[in-house]
Image 1: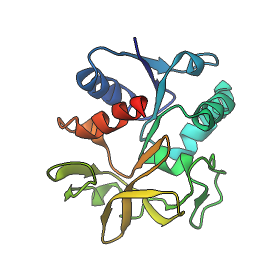
Image 2 (image 1 turned 30 degrees about the vertical axis):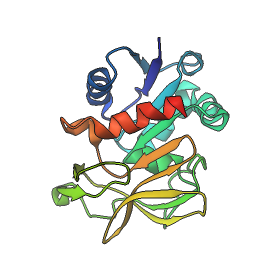
Image 3 (image 1 turned 120 degrees about the vertical axis):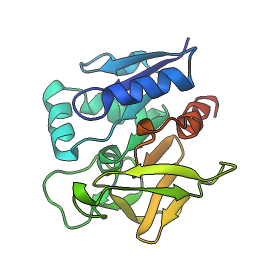
Image 4 (image 1 turned 90 degrees about the horizontal axis):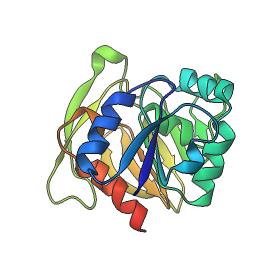
Length: 192
């Protein structure tokens, strides 16, 4: 049975767990909080939240190295909103923390403005047969993507969904909709 871990140090943890259980009824979805749990998982989710807080909590719990090793070994990783910031190689104009450098993307945090500027938009996502209604909350944007990064969706402000090998990064929150197609793309990565 497939075990999917959701990084549970801060952010939209319960929402991702609910969405994954709906999309993958035959999988076990667990909260990852402590060293040793990542090794038990075949795939990982880094949820949205506050990227600086998530980074600090990962460091203090001792799971940062395990997460990096898992991603580099090829385990599928879904990184949403703050998770996208964390997996990037660089954050535009920021010095609060050093991102994990797992994906060849340069990210601009809060590219769409403060929380009161949150919005929904219909996205044409590569691989989906019809538009996906995406929820953006204090969302980042990919300002620059390396040559091996596949752009999956964009808005005028920049790239909002991308994939590089086993990493799927989204500026929006698929866990806040009833549409499980994005989580299904992630789950299909387990077969790649």
